[in-house]
Image (cartoon, rainbow, N blue to C red; front, side, top):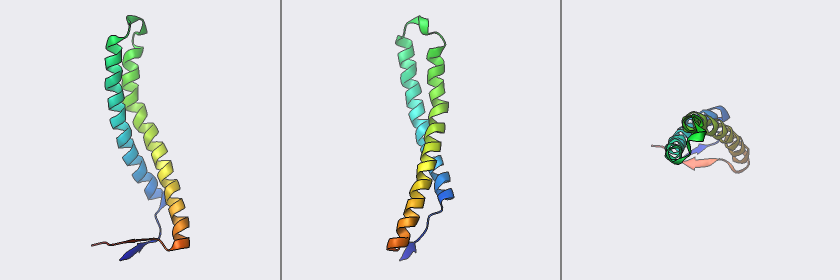
Length: 95
């Protein structure tokens, strides 16, 4: 058994940003598809706003999810490091 005593907040930030950015992209695609469906049903007065709203979700959601996920992953790593000093860390079996 090996004991995980510390997690680097910087690496946790990068990993959290990548994972949550990917999740944000998937949610953005889903949101864009639903937005296009709504745009097909919307009155013509909304014009180009209908299209930009859907495309904006594909760009905006991964960015927001990635940044927020990275920040919370770094905070989680810092909290883990603090608690691991008190209780000794997490035992893992690495093979």
